[in-house]
Length: 248
Ligand code: C5P
Image (cartoon, rainbow, N blue to C red; front, side):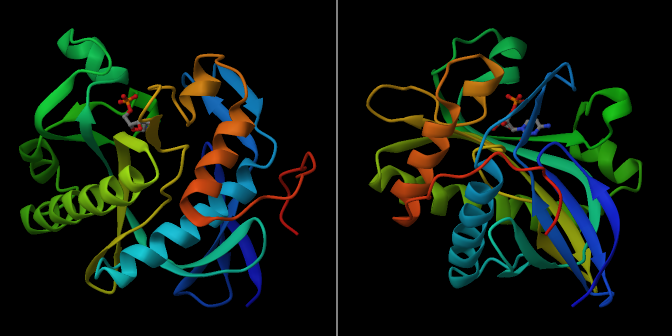
């Protein structure tokens, strides 16, 4: 497998094409970006932790019958995935009020919702990833009603599986975002599932164990990421060096 060129770069990852048109390499960076690029920093070891967490979570989801893009972990910061055509819609799944929902509906953070909330946002930074509904998405031809049904069904299953395994380790799943892609006619769960894309709270103290520690300057961001990795997988990360975020 040879890497050819960079095909996408986001907040926490860089995606490379390979000489196999059906496969891509995801490289996880330590760089952290918040508030639409206004806050940029580094979380030492984040790339390694998110890579290990994605391996663990995507493998678990495959075992539970949820198709996704993960093939295998290549090294400490990279994984091999199926090269999907990303559907430019982000799905946010919410169990407890936090973040942008708290602002939008005027509820306090931490309020429990009577049912799971599913939100759709266009994946378009130039217009700040606006919240849209399913009829906008089908009207714009971004995804079909059938694809949206598949995405919603998978999102709810992921929520149920993750909520269960996290509650066993005293972590509350507040909310998360998912992305999907098309691969030879199928809709596959793609992107990443990590403390960069989920809100994880310590169930006893309600302290965030995720990227909100960076967004809100709560301190010990590395410690929180390591704690999530260790509680979920049993893996203890050796001291990680500051990384250049270049693929090796
Ligand atoms: O900010 P908001 O409350 O809408 O975020 C909901 C969930 O989606 C959070 O877990 C957040 O970390 C995640 N998210 C993300 N990438 C974005 C926006 C939100 O991973 N660009």
